[in-house]
Image (cartoon, rainbow, N blue to C red; front, top):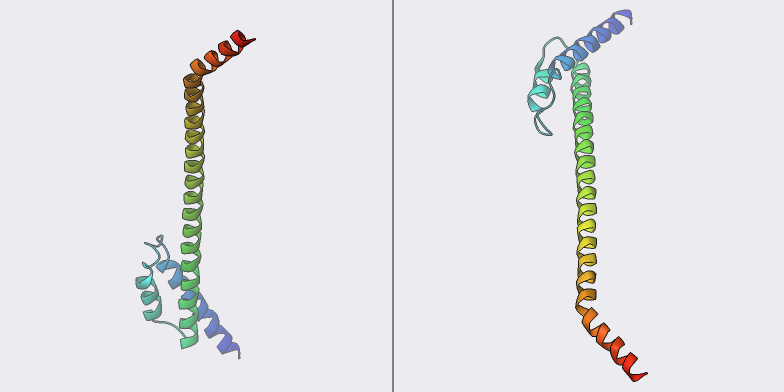
Amino acid sequence: MKKLLATLGLASVLAAGTASIALAGPPAGATGHGEAVAAVAKAAGYASGRARGEAVSTLAKQHGALVSAAAKAQGAAASAAGKAKGAAAAAAGQANADAGQANANAAAEPGLLRAQAGRANSD
């Protein structure tokens, strides 16, 4: 039992060390982790197939967390950019509406003045 625990402990240390070496650099992208997984899976020194599987699983989980964090950051940036673009478009639309109203008022003013003059003359 003691020997089994020592072997599993050594396998865990080797697996963690190999995984940390494989993850030393940032992932190239969502699909760029195949070489690292292959290196961990092919590394010698595993006490059992289970230890190798745990090492590969740990690597995959770490990579998944990195990719997920990058995707969330990218989504948040895109959302913020979209909101800013929408606010700018709304402001531009309001400015166009205000300018259109001003043009309509200016165009209607001569007719309004004539109508007021006509009412004044009829009184």
